[in-house]
Image (cartoon, rainbow over all chains, first blue to last red; front, side, top):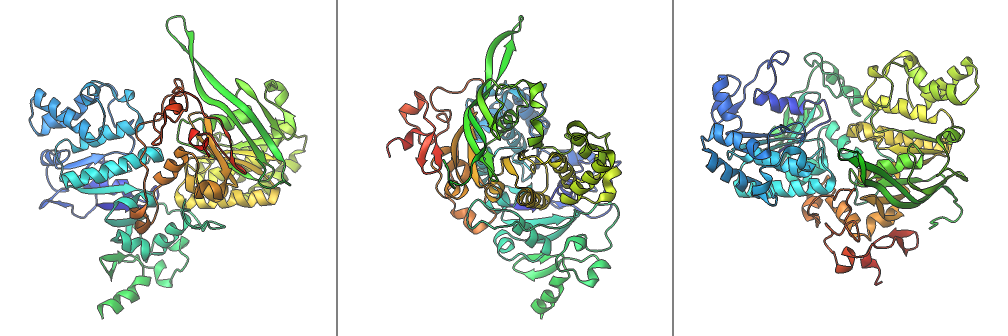
Length: 295
Length: 331
């Protein structure tokens, strides 16, 4: 499971949506790059092929379960829709599968609830329905965009538990987007930290939390207070504001807020340096480390 | 109740109830009540920060607003700075308003988009003081300095500011009349983590500088642990536990507090896998139909028969540590 963390506006959701061609174009325009899924470049395939992949092989869970479910259809219909379109199931088979899915995500009395409309579900239950829809066609990859942000902590704990359980049962790859480092620590195998539209650090989860290399990751880990352990007298802050993403970056996007900027940071955007243990970081401080590592 | 006998309560709330009527049917008959706040009692001591935590819909925001009498409360008594304001008509409250102010959750929605920062911060001065325009201008600049906004931005409109800066404008406005008591209703919920820390530090600085008393409403348990002196946990319109910060986080007495604390994800993978998690089943019941007996009995992992019959009493279980649970009756 890959976790993606970053502040709002750091480009987490946009990255994931562009992978699937979910951004309306114009205004959005994917400039360059490739997205390879199962040997095919998703940015080059025709819309027809893309449609068979979206929903069938790649499931997507959106942030807000209220606005992403259609209020005028009952949830049974919404779960059955991908089943009938992608899997070609008839109504009966789809209904049976939909009921199975609702049971899988832990909604009691599934058969009756299929006839209910989204407003009759609570927030946590709605998010379960969204997960059921995303899982409907047994996707190989599930992209979850802040699936627990709109939920309370006790409900969030339920959903996290459910996801861990489902992943073990179904064995799919999951990309989990969030801004909550605590959630990431509990659920991800690898973590990608995004800042200003770029990946600034990428590492296995334990490695990242134990040994953060990028100044932004370090600061981010320090600014979050914890409910356990010692209480700090004063919170460390990251001064300043996140950058506004207007043009192509020509310098390090974190330079203005960085506690240890170098002169080179102002003139060049750092590439991602390997630092060992599957850990890479986009910071010129790591440059020296890399040379040491290679040598 | 005193953890420090020198301190005296600035705000005393006793048995506060805030019910919203439900009208339904063809004749719009009064068919029930949403018991948003249902019998809440607490004190806020001078110079302290009382954290009020709970899940969404538990009535914490309503409670904060009711304490400031932004609603006409159903029953109960509220005493702020020695004055009883529980039943005072709104018109008579105006002279008392300067002592109590509020910082709202959404800085986007709580600032008038057609007013400049200058006029937003100045408005309370216009309403409640007889200062000259020049004095007001001075005061506005002073306030902007205090919250860390550049004076040159006084003529700008709220849309020109980021979320964190907007929240600073809201704080400056709340400070304008030198209040003693400020209710902060989720002031950081709409902000990014790196900006949250800035605003929390600012609130702490201001508290030290002006001797403010806060009621800090939040759903973020880790932030409340940082800022609050004492913490009250609400569930379905009632306070289930109230204790000094250290005691509450180290040894929660109520099963709900325990579950709530264990549900907070830990930003450390090695701790995270070890953490013994209590996963609550089900959802919060509707406040218009609270269950019989203890409000938490539908989800409590340690529920007993008595919980479904009688409501537990909110009482002191250890010095300064209050809780409402039948489990604590035996000891």
